[in-house]
Picture (cartoon, rainbow, N blue to C red):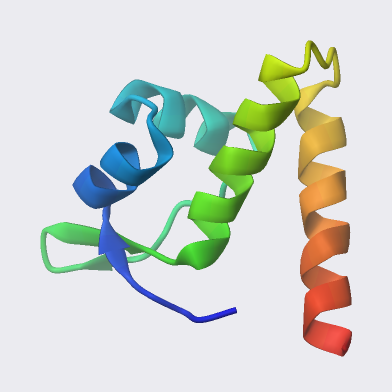
Length: 83
């Protein structure tokens, strides 16, 4: 996985969600709030992957909780880093 950096505006456009959705997911622990570089927040590929993962689950009618999504995404990250 590459580690592209994108502004929150680009993340919104690529993921097809609103800024408030991203902030909600940050509050719920589904996304980590990226560090600020000046006035901008740069989000990596992991944030885009997590947003797409959540969106697909919702489209399939998943009733998983925010904690379930966060756990699954964290497991995926560990597996990707280990192999």
